[in-house]
Picture 1: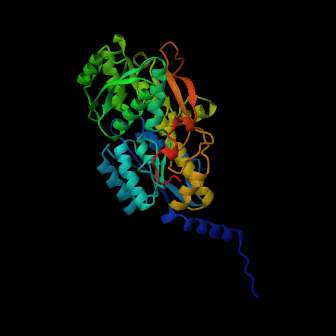
Picture 2: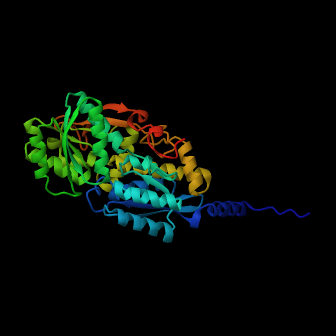
Picture 3: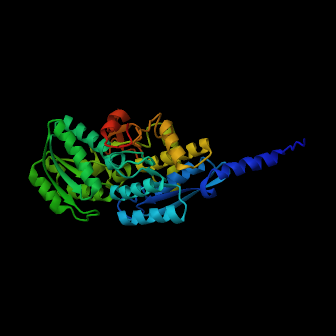
Length: 400
């Protein structure tokens, strides 16, 4: 009997070949689908792509000899463009993962396609609770926040301060409707009332008519159920119209640090908000955010930090399993808690909801801010199990 002894190089080559055989098309390809030119470009956009690249760099841009490739696309806040790009990526460009996707209408379209095509979807931009509710997917993960978490936390804080009468200025699409509903439900549950609501188109340049109606309502709180550039424009114009000077409290139901930076502390001071990440929380968040700022010129939003966390957890799972098979990877991702600079031991439920902590914050006054991007006072930590909807009550058919 003849025994063949393989050299170390041959064994390494064989192992590498086996590993690559476990990776589809010989590459791990992640498609960063975002708003790169519109109202969410600042809180997602190129910053999200940078965050994904930072995650890939931690693995040397390769896993077991298979390179990691990150491509980018702009959905322009249109569900049909998001759907067409996703189909092209999955069918023609062998993309394994679609990530980011701010705009709930776009994300719902992508969720359906990735579910049908059995590809993983890592969401860090959209807020609709339907994504982990009735439209959930075994391949879909809602990572960073959702409308229930941010809206209910902000509404609860203000109602408990005695501000019980609310008026909503709402973006007229799936995201805005959901954000308004979550906040309004919390207000009513705590004994408050909704004086009225008005809806505006996406990327509205002039909020004057909406603000005059809100002023006329006499509501204690004027709440903006919108995001990004719309929220910035609305709050700036509300200050110009004297809404807060007249005694009404402004509430942005989804605010990021980028929004506060654009508004300035003089305009935004005192605003309450809920975020899942703040760059200045500890040494770990500061170190990562410094690297991000060196690449982008600014501190990260929670959405951008969430992209990093999601992509890192995905790549860590692929490395552990030695395959990018979507069924195996998505199952394993749910079974292992998420631990990184953003969250510690955060569980992932069957419906794809990541249960990281949320933080209720208040925007500092100009006098309280001591250095660049020193904007938030953390009022309290809201554990993930309290911040998000119980999966059993989510309406997701995957939850047993």
